[in-house]
Image 1 (cartoon, rainbow, N blue to C red):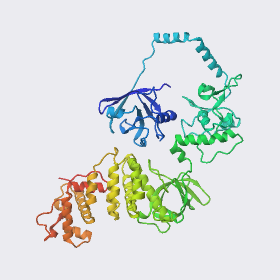
Image 2: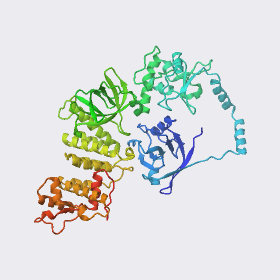
Image 3: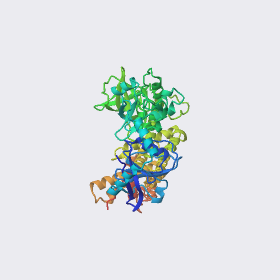
Image 4: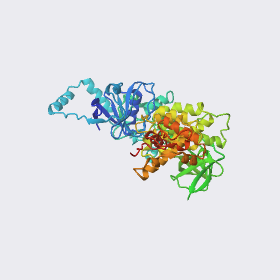
Length: 616
């Protein structure tokens, strides 16, 4: 099938982005996409490539600069970056669905910004007329004799090739396994194997030649010409595709277990080469199908599930970044999803700071329990055991294991919503903050994750790096749960689809300047005002305001003068209306807390809501 080309225009800015951009289906042609990621655009691809059906962009070293633009399903720009060979490639994640590889500095010259709308128009090549067809026919009649002879020799090579076993290529679909009886028989018979697709044919000899250099000639990338009279070995790259003969390779390329040894030494030699190639090409997929994560015993750690709101405790055998092994008498079927709460052994913990929740899927059953894998939200990658030991703590202690689980979950969430802040956040939690401040930050992040999960398309949202770092820095000083919930609300509402919204900055600065009592007064006043507005759109100011007596009763504080001063601090920040003239230090009981529009908006953001309006 002939590749299609398109012209691209930026309808938002009414500019042209590229002409003659070639479409590449990354699911069917991953090697082409990989080559572009490594080498950049070739001499015949100056206009660029449009990579469709993208699931992951290989994080591989590059030798040429180019521009990379991620587009969503509606062809809107999700992310754009001008990539030098040394620059870090942005992670491909939702809502991105395709990628444009453009010549270097196209983004700056075309002034492409996030959110721009692109339009694609297919370039239709004109059909050849009768004269053109005749001219093309005449061209073949004037071929030089030497060229014609060379063509005949080349055709003779493939005129009578030996039988070749043909199979679907795992390069085009890494989820296709090739452990079939015909392939096993072909390998057992030491027959040539050709990996074929309806569009292209791929062989492994070129890659294996480099890996097995210096071994037996039969295991190198040079293969014999199939003509019976030919005895000279010809490099694979110099031969027509259909004449290449590929030595058999192990069939279980994505297996979790090593391939069994055979009597054929070259098969055993090539198995590691294929493994390394797949690990390089599809690192995420390969890691998902191999148990490479470090497993540690988790004595003293328990997992709870709930049946009719009743918690049941199970003993945890070991834990890794991918999952855990549960000692239990339950017989969940493989594939079953179970919500587990991990904590130290003992009664169920009601305090959220002493537990962590995971969704798990049953993957296998054992004699004394069940193996389960963590089911994390899209874009989250749990990285256990990366935190250095603090104060010589015993890493086998259940408290240490639980702290590691909570830390890894919080970091996975923060890395997902703000990949550029990965290094800074990791440095902050692992080295900069004390144990207590790090624990406070982890709790804020976990609360924010639960809040954000309630949003539609929450896994497509991202936050600005500056907001993340400010919230974590200021919130790390807070060890009161209800105040941590306010910081978590700001963290959750800092996430947007564009990831560039900095409107929460003013609320972060205000909350960091407020003491606990003024914060509690503002929370009470805003909660009462919003209840009154919900009940009646024309609520009076008396119903919207909170009196000093109400505040004293709810806060259990009889110090009216302190309440009066706290309300004065809030009015100076513009969060509540100024007190009436009757209220003074001599008459603090006359003080009232009437929230302003700014105060209500801050209250909404701190509670995970994005907007609120004050009734007239």
